[in-house]
Length: 125
Image 1 (cartoon, one colour):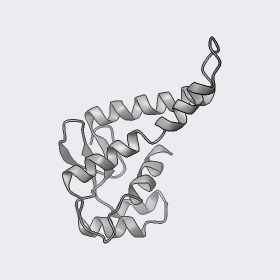
Image 2 (cartoon, helix red, strand yellow; image 1 turned 90 degrees about the vertical axis):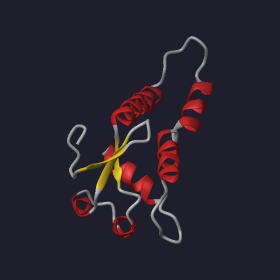
Image 3 (cartoon, rainbow, N blue to C red; image 1 turned 180 degrees about the vertical axis):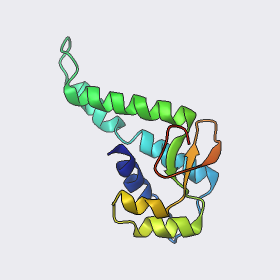
């Protein structure tokens, strides 16, 4: 599930010592998340012989990146990384989908806007 993988990635972005993240830090973490497969994709492209079709893996990564970029345009759904108590809960989270209901979420779009969201995610909530 993409949402769980995203949250696991962002869990690793929690500052040590634990403190609320700044707007810039949140946007940097999102940028790292959105570009996490760039190196793998470059390797796959480099290994493909000229004139050969894209591999299934390359297609999947490109589709995933396209989907995430489009979601980021309207608001990428992430845990609220600017709330210290939420970060404490996130740092203790064990990867279970239902345990996410105790966290607060936001949507962060490309323009830098951050707005409250809900769990589970519903469209552009």
